[in-house]
Length: 167
Image (cartoon, rainbow, N blue to C red; front, side, top):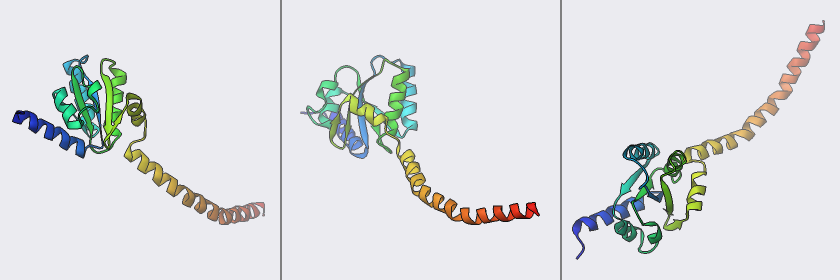
């Protein structure tokens, strides 16, 4: 019979997976304690969290056999709660500085992502960046039209100013 602590842990992981926009399986065995604190801090600032638990419990919670190949060694799950990209970007920034961390696989919307797909996800703009790009694209034509409409009166003023300067 399964132990109640393990059942609670599986339920916790499943709940976090349900609420998260994306999750990444990492191997943190090469990192030091201070590196792990830095990683946790950067992930938390990006709106995510890290959960370290038994590999078998992660396998059961994600779906038996979906990420079994990645669950070897000291594994942890990095959840991106607010934005699917933000915590993954922070993870890859940490990985770039600290090569001892290994990124294994990811999960997003019940789809298992390879390392290449997780890396591609990390290169996407964040939600805030996408919103600012959208606003600037919407604002662009209106700004151009305002410039065109004000060009005629401005040209008239310049012409009148040139005539008055000549006289």
